Image 1 (cartoon, rainbow, N blue to C red):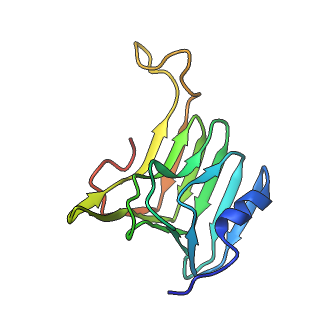
Image 2: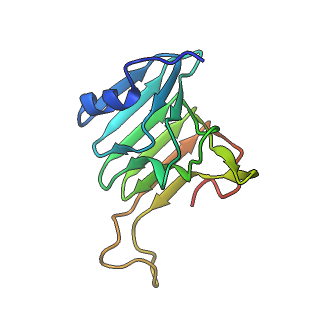
Length: 157
């Protein structure tokens, strides 16, 4: 496995609002808590997509797209296969477009297969009851040409 520097997380911080992070082919071991707070595009190099793996187990979401932000993610592999990844990408009151990406979220827990959530979307009120004045704004997800492997819970929750 080839590990590449600088890390993708550093590119996210440097890109700023509306920026683009171009990720070359290779394997990137990243923080297990990456926050997207501004509009951002992450594009992996083709034909061999870069592989991003967490540096440890996650307590909640690995990539968190916060209120008001927009994430455009394409041509990358998010591989949590050797760690316990609860949620690969969490979108809360934000927007995300995931295209031509692959997310493999798996591991072992007490010698039993562990399965996580690939993408969780939260936000907005549901007419007739769910949600409240404190709910995050509506969230949007545009998911296309993506493959999710080894999941035991729904792809979109």
